[in-house]
Structure formats: C-alpha cells, structure tokens
Image (cartoon, rainbow, N blue to C red):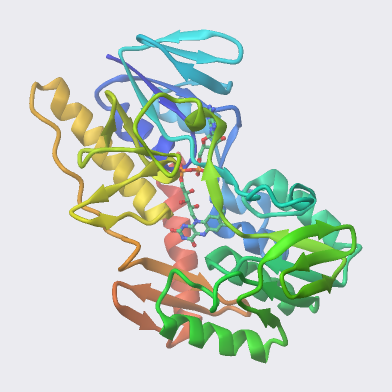
Length: 349
Ligand SMILES: Cc1cc2nc3c(=O)[nH]c(=O)nc-3n(C[C@H](O)[C@H](O)[C@H](O)COP(=O)(O)OP(=O)(O)OC[C@H]3O[C@@H](n4cnc5c(N)ncnc54)[C@H](O)[C@@H]3O)c2cc1C
C-alpha cells in the first residue's frame, strides 16, 4: 500500500516511522529538517544550537525506507496528492501539516518576530542584537518561556496578555507561581491588555502605547493554508476528526487537527501529536487487516493538560493533570531536556 504523509513535523515523522513497517510511505515535506519546537526559546537565547533541535529528514528517510518529496502539498483529489510541482498517486493519505502563526488581522503584527519555526527564530535572534526593550505579546507556554529567556539575558521585557492572567489555559495556581517568578526577574506583566496595532517603535493597546525596540509575537496559532483549502469537517478551522482520528477518509493528527473524544479536547502539544500519530498508524494497520479502527484516548486534554514549562536559569515546572510540581525546578528542567533528547533520538539513526 502507498501511503502519502503530508507534513514532516513531529506527528508526520512519527506516523511515517510506524507505517513504514507495513506500507510504502511517501513523505511530502518542503523542509530538509524536522525541528523540535520546544527548544526554540532556548535557541533564541543561545543555550542550544541548531543541531541540538533538528532531525535530518534525509537520514530519517534512508533509515526507515521512506521516500521524501521535498515539496509543499496544495490539495488532495481522488487518490492523488497535489503539490506545487507534481501530482503524487497514493492509496491513502494522512494530514499532519501543523499550524501557522495567528496575527488575528492586527495591523503591523506580521512585521513582528516569533519562535514558531527555525527560520523565524533565527531571524528574531539576529534582530535581538540591536534591541534592548522587548514586548512579548501573549503569555501562553511559549510567551512565558520567551519572556524569561530574554529577561535572563538582561533585556527589558514587557509582556502583554489579553486575558486577566498569564498562562490562561492552565490553572490559576500555575499562573500565580509563574507570575511571581516573572516579577522577580523584573518582567512587566500587563494583563487584560489587548494589542490593537503594532508600530515601528512599540505596540498600541486598549490601555495605551507600550514602546519597545522589538516585538515577539507569541499570541497563538491558526490552521495552515493547506487546511483552510481542504474540504473536510472543521472546528474553528481545524480538521475535525472523529474518535478514530479520521475525517472524510483521511487520518489527521497533531496541531492541524481538532481532536475531541468523550467531551475532552486534546492539547496542541508534542505529546499529543506523537500519541495521535502512533494511534493513526495502528488504526491504518488494523484497517488493512480488515478490522475497524479503534477510538483514540486523549492523554493531555485542555482541562487536564500535561506540560513542562521552562522558566530559564535551568528551571522548569511540571503540570500533570490536576497537579503542579514546582520542586525541585532544576531536576524538572533536566527531566524535560532528557525527555526531549530521548524524543529526538527516536527519529535519529
Ligand atoms: C515555541 C514552541 C514551544 C513549544 N513547546 C512545547 C513543549 O514544551 N511541549 C510540548 O509538548 N509541545 C510544545 N510545543 C508544541 C509542539 O511543538 C507541537 O504541538 C508539535 O510540534 C506539533 O507537531 P505537528 O507535527 O502537528 O506540527 P509541526 O511540528 O509544526 O509540523 C508540521 C509540518 O508540516 C509541514 N507542512 C505545513 N504545510 C505543509 C504542506 N502544505 N505540505 C507539506 N508539508 C507541510 C511543515 O513544514 C512542518 O514540518 C511548542 C511549540 C512551539 C512553537
């Protein structure tokens, strides 16, 4: 069976590795490297190098007998994946195209910097050379990690958050704990403050202008162009899969998918991306045997997330279901680094 995997991020590579055991896999991915996004804030601050967070897709494909088509998919037809350069015939296709930076249509926001991709992070790192005061827009996991990394380097950091507390998707206990650390680091936190426009020398908010030399945009994600053009069921633009992770005859998983099972919604995290990809590969195998696909079980849901948040200076905390583990932060940091290394080792020869 010829299976096309659209997107070679964490989810796509995980699926490709498992599916290569029982199918001919074609990976459609424009980049030569898979990037571990969790380390991008530390790439920004210079704690890690590019090679620490990249997996060579060429080596991965050689190792697992996967064909790499270095191209961007534009659509799916009847047994065909259309790319910018050609048409690829396949018997089954899976969608793992991740997400894009969401600027919410805010004027000037597209000129800001972010850490969502390797290229964007390197661009931001270069721009930091000529900056002293930085505004970080958004205080989810990425915004908090970026703000603390930059504060550790000695930049003046101001965080702007539209909601009434930082880390709004986590419990108030997590928010309060991290808020106190940000205060100690001298970070100015502006909650209930919404950016309405980005200008050359700062951001204009509903409460007035905040001047700075550089704006880091960590305010959220939106579905990619490929997903926007796809004729499948959607939830707020994301591919809405059923409990077996299927939508209109495709599997979709990772950041591009809205996964809702038994009233729980999966978080857009590496843990979920990998677990959904593995489950989809197992389901495809079952379908090939003539068995029906099994329902997926969410591990990290929006109401009970699993996450480790890095807080700079070799510190991290862990959120596991309803619990917050804040001690010892040095050990939790080392655990996170170890988990990432193991995670990347999974794709390396
Ligand atoms: C700064 C940052 C920090 C993070 N920290 C953590 C963390 O600490 N813990 C955690 O669990 N999660 C973290 N995440 C989230 C985690 O990285 C993502 O959930 C995970 O990478 C999702 O995997 P994915 O394969 O769905 O998407 P991605 O890894 O984004 O991969 C999508 C791939 O699809 C490709 N693609 C896109 N469009 C097309 C197309 N049209 N055709 C072909 N290919 C296409 C892209 O080039 C990309 O390679 C973080 C994310 C960011 C941005």
